[in-house]
Image (cartoon, rainbow, N blue to C red; front, side, top):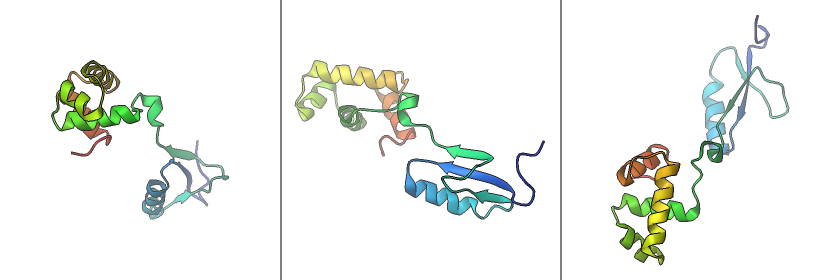
Length: 122
C-alpha cells in the first residue's frame, strides 16, 4: 500500500507551535526529493509535530523556573528562599516538586535534566 501519490510525493504537514522552528524545518525538508510540505488546510500523509510541554509533565511554573535557575547556581534552600523572598520550607517544597516533575534523583540531577530539556541553559 502506498501512502502517497507517486506524482506528488509524500505530503508532510508541520504542526509545531514555534513559528521559527517550523519555518527552519520546512526550509530543510523542502530540499528532500519527493517530499512536499503542505499548507495548514491541506491533507497530509504524515504530520510532524512537537508534543505540548504540559503533556509530558515538563511544564514548569514561573516560580519553578526561578528555583531551577538558582539550583543551577548551587544555592541551598535557605539561599533560594532569601533570593526569592520566600521561606526556606517553601523553597524546599519547590525543589521537591522540581525533582518529581523532572523525574530526577536529586538536586544536581534535576539541574542536569532541566539543561538537557532546554529549560535552563548552563
